Image 1: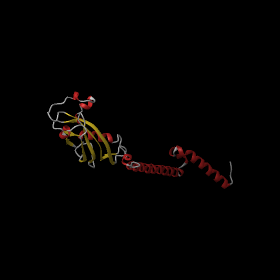
Image 2: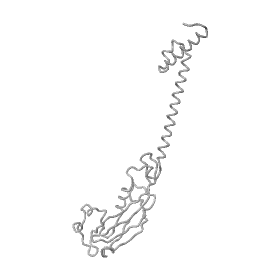
Image 3: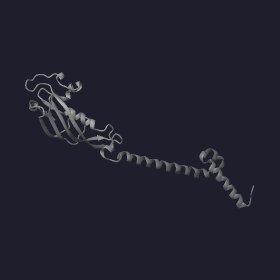
Image 4: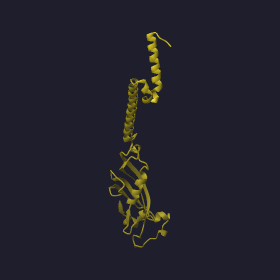
Length: 220
């Protein structure tokens, strides 16, 4: 991603160079995990103040879903359009002060946009910045073309299953507690039964007593 533009700088305004890129990105940034080389067409145009670099580039990166932590492959495509200015005149070697160029001061002082003393134009820093700008700020599985986060969905299903198991266990335990209580002496009921079942047991006990009276022909 470095281009010697000495000959281009000697030519008149409007001269161009075109390059087909297939660049390895493995050492571009330790925080980026590229899976594919950087590919695309780059055009260098001689301007009155330097070289205009333009083109459309693409690659693919491996990142992590911020929602479910699953590994993702994200395609990245971005456009480049930057003006690079030379530090020295190509014919005399004279240092060219930024004030001799037109443009924003911050752009003129940006080291990433300088053509060095050997007339090498280096786009690596520009590419690195553009890749980060092209990535989603909060990457999720949807950015990789998936309709949902697979890990998150599996976790939700597991949580639902665990919740259902807990509910069944609670109901079973309450039923067992009620059955055990039915066989206890009446004097122990008040201290052993769950208050939630007290009304039900009282109603059931009264109905049982009424049934026994009817069966024996007695009434109050």
